Length: 87
Length: 205
Image (cartoon, rainbow over all chains, first blue to last red):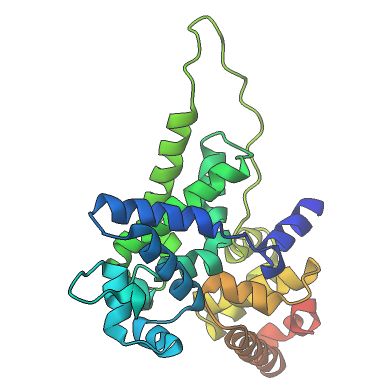
């Protein structure tokens, strides 16, 4: 019965498994860097923030009051004449 | 998963934040099957990250109407991750050292419907309940009803929340499933003499 109670507690959301965001973010940054992304750490941080908020790019861009293509460019590492980090 | 299926890399953070414990539970089961009963938290964190990224890679092929949760659907892939992890960690035993004797099988969290099926083979009251459930609820809703009742009996203060997470549903949807199934079972017990004994079951209280 004790084991069953423990199992019930483990299933309850109050016992939720804690996400190690830093590890996930570092892993994605490494993948992006390997793929030749020009600013992998920044892009991974942006993805982590947007992901944890559960927002798509349009909603996230609206929240930040920046154009959606700016979010896309930062995440995808699109380089053009503009410097997105100085917008 | 819709975000993931659309190729949105950000979704993997939400997936792991929301369902990392479910994924960890599946990975723990595979590790236990492979002889690792108590993995280090750090190893498990790393495996959940790997699993999240593996699910992200395959999200495009997952179908929400398929009935399986993503980590159940990708169970083989998660098992492969667990197996690879054990393989990396395993050291080779010297040839003259005997391995440990096999111990008792680790406990497995049984599915409630399967348990009821097993009990129904021995007990007429369980058989009757199973027949009634089969006539009023789908297999998924039977599982939801029994899981909620088991969680409640084990002291879970919010069983609908717990079971909703297991099934990828909202808690109010789970409550609705439970209410409808119980209403139908009570109707069956009141209106059909064959099922009248069910009225005395705590399940229907």
